[in-house]
Image 1 (cartoon, helix red, strand yellow):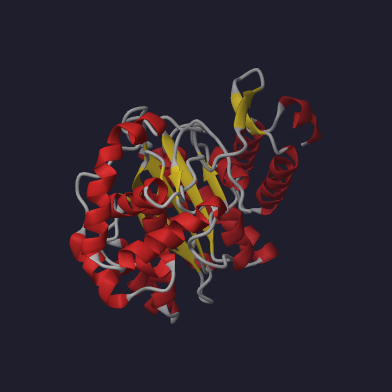
Image 2 (image 1 turned 45 degrees about the horizontal axis):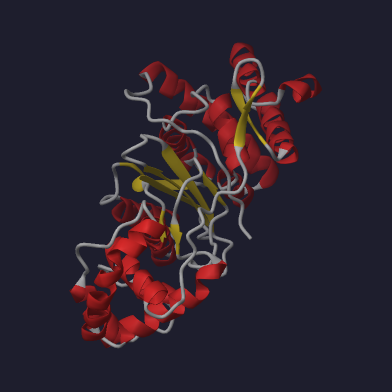
Length: 357
């Protein structure tokens, strides 16, 4: 079972000022160098996939703890800072079409096979935009990898109605890309159609079986399904019947005859609408519903006199803080920068624990 969590990440307009961003890169360079030296490249990738550590690092680097920029600006700073320490980064905000090209170029520089990293990048984005339909559109995707091909993904979606963001963390240590693959999902709790849930296993199986019978079968079932539109919307108000289904993708499914849901989902054109149509067919015609439970289970609650967040999992936050404090203490920074970084880190520690630092 992966880690999931909640944090309020509202959209804040504007950019990080250049003086702040340059400082963030400098601090990320110093901290990252110590962590890679002390714990290794793989550990650094694991830490990126840990929402507690990532959130604390963002505070240390001086960024606002609760805005959507926590994700986008922090990953950009890490991407720039970590190349000299054996960690390559690709992608970022608004870079969907350049990510694969960037992976290929940087993998070549490191003499590492780009194909598994490209696949991980594509599938993480596909899962969080199609298999997990939670009302958030992915607009930021970043993947970090080392010379051994180990990787971590941090991506973020935005809910157009609430203007809040949701962050998705991934790590290479997964059995497959489908069943509960995230190390963390951080965002506001809401409604979702979650085809990655273990309780969606039968719905996934029916989806594959129906799709493999060909577009004609899907079209027939879908026409029958339209009669249940009112019932469906009454059950799941957030999600609606898809207006368009990618019949070309379904024809390819029929020709390829995929043996797994992951293989089916990896087919070009198998997007959110087609996945949703198959899930609805599985639910209302064959009685195998997908999970409608949002995969968010713990929260970064609001606490402390300054209204800063602390996670329910105090031990995880304490460990993150301890590791970052050690990295700051050992990093080659000016004394003033170290003091500022430690003060920023303190903001993220629960008030009752602050005296322990």
